[in-house]
Length: 174
Image (cartoon, rainbow, N blue to C red; front, side, top):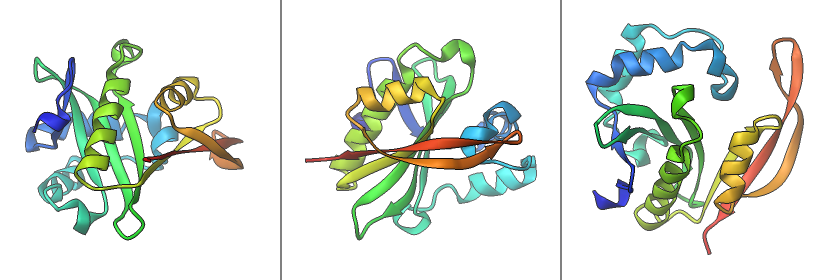
């Protein structure tokens, strides 16, 4: 699908071979803050998840895609969640796994591809995302692609004994 191919990366469906990659991400406590994860995931549970990842977005209300380079290496994940067909909107989340791959434009390219896909193939009217007030990289990413900061949820998440506020960003496709 050319809609999901960019200059440096492409987005693809999850494969059974992604089990270890997914396991490493889901069990990395350093990123639990952005994924709202509280407990580790077993390979058994993730294997079951991968077996059901073929569900249509209209049925599952979510879609997780792997961000890959053209060497076919998995770099990260980009998610559509809270898919609401009636109101033509969904949430979006993105993660580049390894720190050395961050800041290279992969997230920006992946988000552009996803936006194009959701507006052209899913006929969405809007996307939204939630970003911690101190996540400067994500604030820059979403703002740079036209997402508008529309609200602040004060003391929204309890992280390591302290509350953090979270911004709500929205992109309306006109």
